[in-house]
Image (cartoon, rainbow over all chains, first blue to last red; front, side):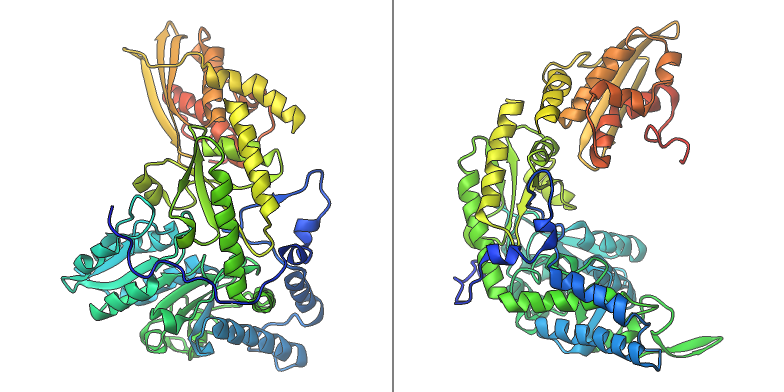
Length: 422
Length: 134
């Protein structure tokens, strides 16, 4: 086993801000809805629950100022446009970027596809290489598979160690021949919870003349992210994992890259001028936003960002990590539990595990009948499961409303599953 | 949880822990392998046919309790019956054998055995219940 790569140990939280997860929980209608059996929601890495303020903001938009943006010369259209653009500005500030560099998309997947199509097809040629990692979500693999097959691009992979971390010592070798044009890396693994040393990867990539794309689907919702500090060139994020609605995400990219890239989707709003035989593109970021965008979702995302800022991203991360630490400790008490991924000091609020030879779907079904919702399967990371030698796993994941009692219910459920299948 | 747990124990776990018709055949007339990519369930079914009748049927592979129990129940049910009879089996028949309610995701686990049988014996490769729309 190699020594751990530099930079992956998460510094002890310096934040003095704390919040009471029980009070926070009270602001999530779904978690307080009456049902036969209390819901223990442990699948926030798949999608987070939504606070009342997000639901109210979207409802208010539809009830009071629903209108198409950037077009109508009347009061509610102007209000809708202002709200949509304010959502962009707030999201940009949230990740330390100028608003002009933030393009709204449907989700992270679409953001990565945007890069693969618009940048990949204009900047890459046969013989170029794209470096990814063995722990990528399918969303940061498949767009590159498509491009590789179409353009003769070579795909290379940073290996994953047995403890579920990137074998960073392999990176210099992967960059050595100068053919790598992009390094794509997940910031926080959706399976292992591993927090990857993105700054170091971006530094090495830059030195080798390659750009860096960060899949921030699991990081922007849980910890402070500043694109300049990361030193990356592209960053993909999604709204629904950060307490916002589905259907809205974003791509951040450095301005000169966006300027040089051709459009991804063609249609209304992304053009400045259209003639029958051709058109001129709109300026950034609207050049990449064709057709009517998800306006209510942008308004909802704005409310979600306000909610996260109120709690503090440092405090959310600290809360998630404390729960992960508690979960690792409690799961250790259950015989036959095998935890995937690194120790608590190197992970966020995600814990994937196996329970003996019981199939993860069976584990999840037994838990479901006790009201405990976990994810089971390969979590859209089949190559990672193959690398770790497990066909599938069960996964518990947390957000600001999760409490230690949720972990206790999971542990009791696992003991029960062992009795059922024992 | 009570009722579901009991049904699960009675109907599924017995077949999961003590599968009927488990194994492979040396000289099968029909052999077919299929998988459910969503969960990684894998199943192979071997059949010996005599005069249009399923003389012997065996299943092998791995997967969750529902996919394995369904394979066990289905093989036990069709062994000795004619291929024509087996062809008429529907998704509802399998769910009745299992005797528990299943959500849409686990439904595929339950139907993998019937899908594999029908693909091997009759070349019907769609999921049971989806043939019409395919």
